[in-house]
Length: 451
Image 1 (cartoon, rainbow, N blue to C red):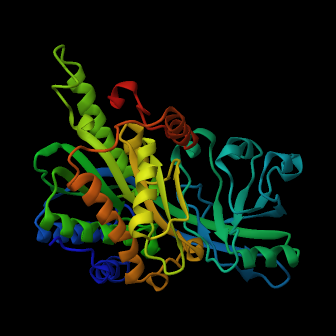
Image 2 (tube, helix red, strand yellow; image 1 turned 45 degrees about the vertical axis):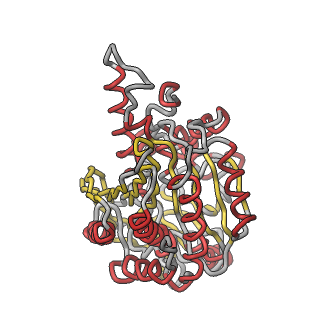
């Protein structure tokens, strides 16, 4: 009899990652500890496991202060945006203006050179226009009540191309207090440093049987936002990955299953970019051989048949979702399996899903992302993302479903049931996704990677 997914085992891994290790920012000692934890569990299960390092640039915040300059000045809890500009050591003071959502319709010369108070954050679609207005600094207000200021990062290509200003986030409640009290001036001080570092992917493989040349990636990122425990995002997905690896190491698979815990997802999908770029470069090198034949000389890239991504799971009050970047049969298979064995899904659709599966899709590997979202999802990327909103039964709920999905369509399928293709509409969405980041991921779906 095949072993079954054990929610309690997965929950133990969750506690180890989110509580014992805690925040696992990219390039940190804690991320390395988490990687070694995953490596040890995969090795103990019998997988051929290794750590793959790659370079990253990290941002460490040293000082963040926001003060309302009223008759009786008071401090406001704030979180600085990583990779945004610093203030001088003494900080900056300025007139505060509320510019709603910073949509272009709200922007005019009245706001030039002042400190902006905006709802949620500066949309990247308007970033260059906003920088042209030369705000002195930006204070972003959380959109939801009861949420601590989130730890976000500015995409460095935007900063390098259009510039940046000191930016902090505050709670919805503090934003309302500023507006209601008519605060006209504030002082902001942000000090940080950028340093080169090394992040890691953990790769563990179960060698396949008869169809071992076909590779299916099962992945989840192990890092978190800096200073955030990241229980839901994404110690939960990494915990499910560890338990799935244990199960399939015992039961085996006709096809090669490659379990990957990616690092540095939270600073721009860096771990999966590193992995996918390696596949692409090897493929491109092989194609330079005059005798190359796609059928006979299948590269590692062309052997990758599917990517299954797990990001945010285990919430007690939530809804299951599945998002496919591949052939229509992927959606149909999830819908049929859900009807057959449960659980129910609130959404099963073809669309992009902003996580590590995007990078594999960008080089032509179809994928499906599983997640469970709910009311507690609003604390994602904030100090509120703790283990209290998650439990073992709900890790098991999705873990068991993915186990059966893998067994039926990957490990035991006589013929792999899904075409290695990404519909043209989705391919365009993937291109737009990476273009929006101002950090395009080449080669962004080359035709030959679709073979």
